[in-house]
Length: 146
Image 1 (cartoon, one colour):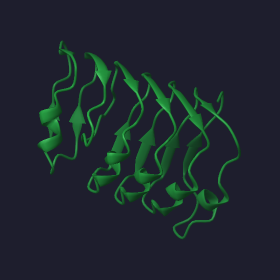
Image 2 (cartoon, helix red, strand yellow; image 1 turned 90 degrees about the horizontal axis):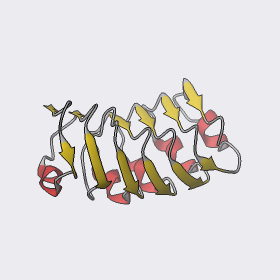
Image 3 (cartoon, one colour; image 1 turned 180 degrees about the horizontal axis):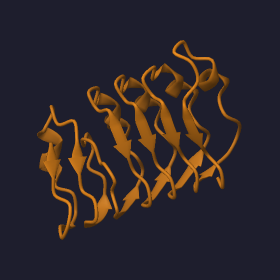
């Protein structure tokens, strides 16, 4: 657990990527800017203006349980590699500038029960696999205003 919420500003240090067993990182109410470093741990409740794409290397964070990227300026597509985060229960990336479709590979995340993606520029339909996966459908899915 690492909590730096409050008056922290600047960019995310790349050295945080070395914290392989970190499961929860709280950077709430900081003034962070810049891109997300590759292979970075949980970004819970980020209240920042991070830019760039979501690195596909996040898929290597197999112990990550909650991943919050709301209210930033992220672009690009949702990486299919996120489907390797087998313990992920919550993924939210609302109010960004993400494009493309929702990857059907996310259905492999059997523990995922919350997927919130509204406020982006996503297109296409909800993948059938998200509704017919072995554990059952996702409990909370929000993709309105995309």
